[in-house]
Image 1 (cartoon, rainbow, N blue to C red):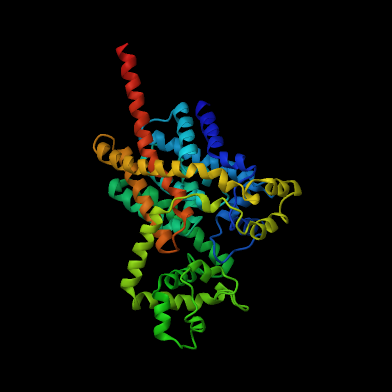
Image 2 (cartoon, rainbow, N blue to C red):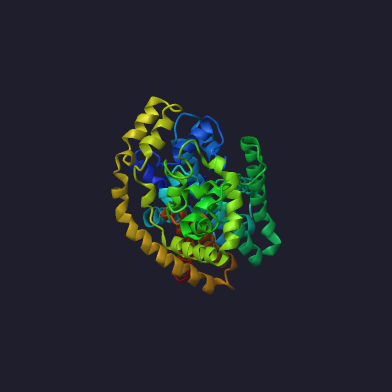
Length: 437
């Protein structure tokens, strides 16, 4: 019972930005995900995983339900991780949650209705599956959370593969335990895309994002300059007018994806031809751009780009009204975020977050070196957290494009190993003093 109460109390602490806002935090994509889950329908640009999660836990009544589920998952995984590397203790757990709540971006993504919450859960789930001694119920629960976490965002496939590679090097006899959620997530993606889009594919339209990245980085524009005019390529009509901003390429209403009666689904067959052709024509330039974007992404860790009211009046509000009671919609409108007040409320924490991340990164390296032989599970977690940050930066920065929220949502993992080590050292010192007295 104390463990359950501690997990629930820590969950409340980790969701505090939602209470500050007066409503769960949303992003411009949240409305589409709500609609996908409650309509339901299959969107071209998102896996059909987080949308049914929202539908299940909101039940068409309130979006506080998914926030409760998210906060409990984060809290429970932190409890199991602490138990794996040392021991779980109710007081320690609540103190850990309080430190994360003030010093890191963890609560801002726990309180956000986006699959971003699942990014840090991928390495946490995989680590616990490999290193922890779990009951049957715990193992099933972590397997299910891990499967949803990996399938919720395509970048998580790359992240999971990298984490499994690290875990296989560290503990190869149990690496299969981590591979099971990834394999299941792949099956889920294949099945949902077969049903929703009639294609047995992991990402039927992922090539569209690939072209956007290649055009934004330069190789795509250089390739068009080389091969155009070509009547078989619609993009040739845009030669010389393509922006270096991949978001504009993808989403600008008068841009190449949406002008006239066009859309990304119609562009996908051309994109599937263009991606390998561009990479083959400019392999060095593509690799250089990927490396630069990965490094840029590693440094972008500010939470501010998920806290404003950008596009919410057109992307979220109209998609809440058809599916939720009027009182729920009114609660959303009364929150700080739709009034663009939340960014200023969060601003005092930005420098604190940065300081914790710098200290956490250095601390994780120190724990890795210090504990490699004496505390292998803790050292393994420190290494996994560092590797997960690099893998996520590549999966998002190099393959999609650098944005603050992509790295901020996972960067806080690096503070955990030093905090676990400090908690253990403090307990040991206390035990020594008690024995001496």
